[in-house]
Image 1 (cartoon, rainbow, N blue to C red):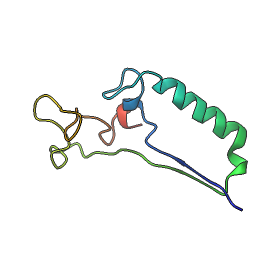
Image 2 (image 1 turned 135 degrees about the vertical axis):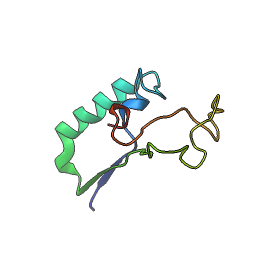
Image 3 (image 1 turned 60 degrees about the vertical axis):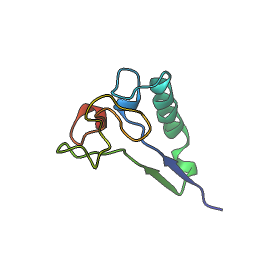
Length: 86
């Protein structure tokens, strides 16, 4: 049986100090890096996604015009070409 690893949206804006940072985000990113360094050869496929937004506009209402509600609207984050999106 082949195995795949799918890494979802591990980006600077979701780590401590980012636009949508969470406590422990840096530790999660570091653990994923350690796992890949030690175990990448165990996977037939490794895929990493990115939350990626256009710098122009409100991204279909995704970015809040005022205070975000964190359900339907969010602060500006993971804008293409920014450090937060890396």
